[in-house]
Image (tube, rainbow, N blue to C red; front, side, top):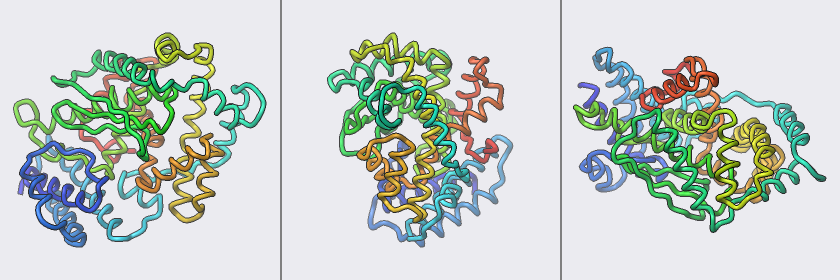
Length: 410
């Protein structure tokens, strides 16, 4: 059978697994008959789906392909391996944190010693003013840059507009290119992009978590431009669409969340913020545009930018908390305390983050480790900070290709 035939079987498999896990299928915009067939009748038994994943992998591996389809085969094999691992997990097998991350996302997350976090906290102690612990001072400063609820949409729309314009200068976006913003509550995440196909997304922002001024730009770029919205739209445009516009590769009409594609998706979405707003350009935009729209004092802008640079280091505390918690070395209270100490979250915020870990488990590595690995790869291709045009070129090539972590040597 050809790869195209195996690709249809792969789509059917992903949709069938989605019957057992409502979080598994992040997006689907392929043929309606495939979706209807997957939703008909009772869910297929997990052992049957595991055997199906193995059958398709063997078929893909044995299929004769030309040089132009080698990357397609690698993509399918990588994704199928993760589907099989996720089915095994659904059957009840408990992976270790590291084994699960490797099985699903093709990387084995390194351990980050507590000394790294302690050093970042020491540097933050020098940056943050006033009495009290670093945690207290961080939270007091953060309170000063929280966007008032009545101004959230205006700030978010301003951030989206600027991120979109900067991205349009380097990436050819589909026509139409559109997304709708919705404000929601009672979710385990801070924001989510639901790609609808046809260059359209719905971006939901969770208002249970007060929106700080830096998060407004983070979410606009991460969920929108040049992040998830652009990543999904370019893959659809270049691969999923039928010839002559695309290649008609049906596997790109479905996105299984727990798969190596997510490390690329989240890593590029996070690093894309830096690509779109390099160096001091982010500080300038936030101070001169977003702070005034939010009605906030611009005197805090520069100091908060320095704080956020250290928070990049502390972001890896999520991985260590998740590893300890999921591997049984930390109980719930201890994991929350770890997050309070090293990620500077409040008790309530730490509890919310642990709810995310309950749901998405080792997925947390895709944000921080994914960003680091994507940054290293882009720099390795000549996309250094002092060559912004080359950085954009390499970045756009990555988000419009079917490369997975193994294909990048990550």
